[in-house]
Image (cartoon, rainbow, N blue to C red):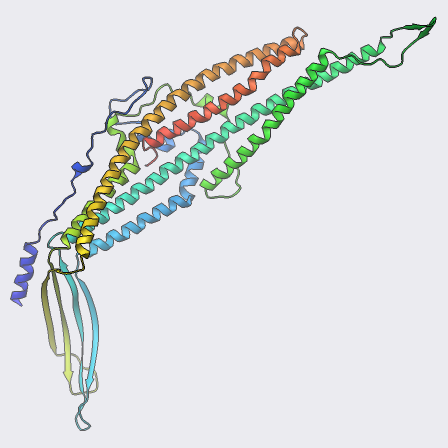
Length: 490
């Protein structure tokens, strides 16, 4: 007994730490300064727009309600959370691999040699140590660390799904608002043209009535002939009516496309919210413009802290950790494995047919050191595969870093361009509205022709469309900037 205890204690004393081939220096890569437009500010501390909670980043209350519903009900996000539970289960399993495995059993043995002899009975209860592997070379610890890294990677992946979900909901929401603005502009042009057309038709009827009252005498062979019908003459009023009809039909032809796009976008948003045919409560574009000024600058943070909130980069880093820990476990599998097995029980042996309490204690213990010699190359193959996977994941991590820098740089450029474009189009739209208002006033007071009114109205619809498109792109870049910086992960 003492010999076995000495072996066990000695084994525990010589347990060595894992080779620890993973080092944090592997993922400590200097991030180059990504290109930033001059008009955008860079804060001097580690805080950036990504550190703002999504509840504070998005000011629209209707949008916040939709995002909250999406986080609670989206099936993709729910599946990602289940992946976390699955990884956590593997982690618990790896942590319990350090503990010995026991089994408990009851036994009853009866033997009868001859008719004259009493039957021989043996019965009892035993507790068996089926297997206990001493982690000499860190194989179990490496497996446990790999499980921890996998769990953290799954959590980061779930956060990445959440960030994308929030961005998709916000993108479709603002796209709907801008489509509503387009539809409102088309309806306004349709209504204006209908009013002008009705006025022109009324003016034309008055003109025809005035002509009907005019009589042109015609003399034929000294007889006076009064015509009953005078053929109408083509005037500028006829041209104006047809041009107004053309503008009206043009706007009416555009309207169905916008309505179809609104229908499809609403379906896409409902899909993200995992619901069917529910109305989308949303604000109006003019209310958003009034409540949310177009930002002149955005604090994006110091470039070195770019990756602080990016869940995809963190997931890639944890994947590198997992791969290197699995590589360590594969290396340790080549070394001898020390296992302990044994058992203890209480047994009884009597010449009786009834169960009696046991009167003896039985125990045994076995220690073994097993060195794998020939496994068809499996262990070396596993080791080589793990080494290759570790290098692949390291390359993937580095590529993810470069991609992140490029995404931020590109998004900042487009954000700056669209912000400038929106401001210019707002001024253009205000000028065109004034010009149309002045022309309409002069036309109604017979101081300007319809051609002047038409010339003022024609660019309005296209400018309003351009403004809605610019707002769409601006808000998409506003959302994309928050996403590429890792915003919304909390």
